[in-house]
Length: 428
Image (cartoon, rainbow, N blue to C red):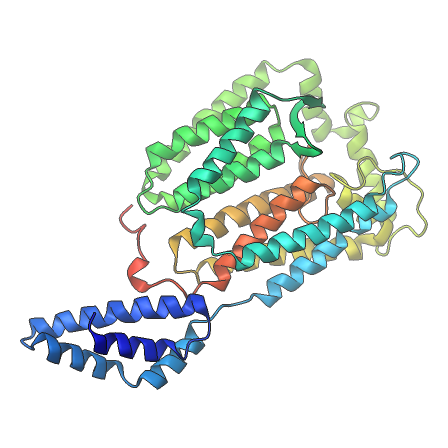
């Protein structure tokens, strides 16, 4: 690049305020000048004349710099941030109705506030973090994911409700941590334009097997759905193999059901007909339905009914019972708006890696959110599915914060991808 081109580029970028955008504009301008100069040289002009004419065709450096400053600047999705703040604050409500007597004065309210502050800090940090740097950190993240896999499958030091946990220095590594790490790791590898379908499958199989060993059926379901959607959109030409694979999995699950133990079959029957099993597995369904009905439109004022896991899996029931279907319905609407907004923004992202991140994030969020609402309203079997933004816990908070922070990071830099970088997937 000659001194004249460098001078022109520096003058253009001097009008661009954002450091990230400045670098992007300089690279893009250099690329276009190089391509235009090459075309003019092929047309018969000397290298010096071709370069001068290419610069002239680009126009005034001042005007171009001002236009680039308007076009290429960090974007902040204030609408999404507003919805995240609102639904996160709604997550405080369940902790206000936890019985201190039943939960040993654990002060979940104070802890929830701490988690909210931590979650907000992580979300903001990831928003300012350049998501493209994840590529250079892929092996660090892979090593961390491997550590989680080994810790949960080979060295669990706590067993709770049959599921394995790894606890050290007050921190808990569980299935939620594993799903977050596994999805993030796969997203990074799938974001590579040279990613191969048959190389991704073994990674998926190993991590899925680890979740099955823990064991945590809820985590297996969430992880499987998320990865399936990622593979479906990432490898369009391999969709028939995905369909055949899940057909085989469905047949295998059918065989598993035929060999299920009586108590396992009872849980399935209780979901279909809870009245028949009202004294055993069906009680939870009937009790939850009763609490939702008692809540009415505006909640049971001074309600004293006890709710199982009121601040975690049944947080939606807690909100609806105490504050009514007005609050519960508002929570559902905001959750749906978050999903729709994330999906709509995929089309505005030019970077395939950024698209993969949003697809993975919205699938992870939607699967958990919709399933939790579905099981609380009696549409789906009750499992240990937490409600994003609402359910209490450090690991759910970390997962949601990282997911939303990465979305905001991608959106912030949606105009920072050169056109020559687009279309890496078209060859797949």
